[in-house]
Image (cartoon, rainbow, N blue to C red; front, side):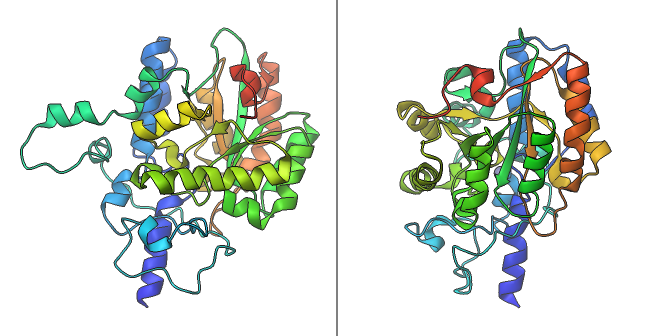
Length: 349
Ligand SMILES: [Zn+2]
């Protein structure tokens, strides 16, 4: 019973989301986006990502991801917010991650200070200067932290996170092939281990692969070693499958701290988040997915969708929206490119 409770609670976190829980309706976000100047917009986008991050859920101490860390990473110590009980021995690295979309949503305010240490005094100003927000990190490290491409070119990049799986990823690939569009897949090392043929198919069909960590941990919560292991173990797996070490990293939930940004910069990676969130992880139907994307997309957009998720998640809407989305955006004058093409960078390190 305890194990079941724990499994349920830890799973509440992931949902898929890289983009995760929405604490406010999409319409509110989009309505403020379009007329915002670039710099302010970057800030706004990053702020939204922060709101969507799972920190709050973590802070409850009862929710986290169900995917297991790399073999070299002891599970218990990698899960600082997990209950005192260690993961069940029945969990193995080859088990399919369970992702539960029914995550609890905490107040945005709380999520804005996820990584602030609890201090004895109320030196809030000093503390907030120490820990930069995602929006501050984007501004401080513009060459390393990307949310979108140039607004001067009418190009967009479709991105698909949390795969590969055998349930939705092949259908996403079929839809992309039918529409002759290349996309970017941010994959998990654990899932790549389970479905190497799907990874190879993604690469063989001309799509770009990026690193989405090994087991979808909330990276800012990890020690330096464990963070690096999440990136490097995935890189090794991918290198063996596709022949290159991906330069692009998308942290789960878009969440990352400054130390980690510095490490990424020093190791010649790029962090690629997004500025358009389809919210498809909520098992939306295709009309809803399409609506969400069309409302937010503008030149240079990086669009977040998913090609994998929890058993309870239905990404049929994602798959079905791909064709109409491409048709509509092409009719509006957009062309589809991979993230490296959009950002004018290499796909490999
Ligand atoms: Zn993700």
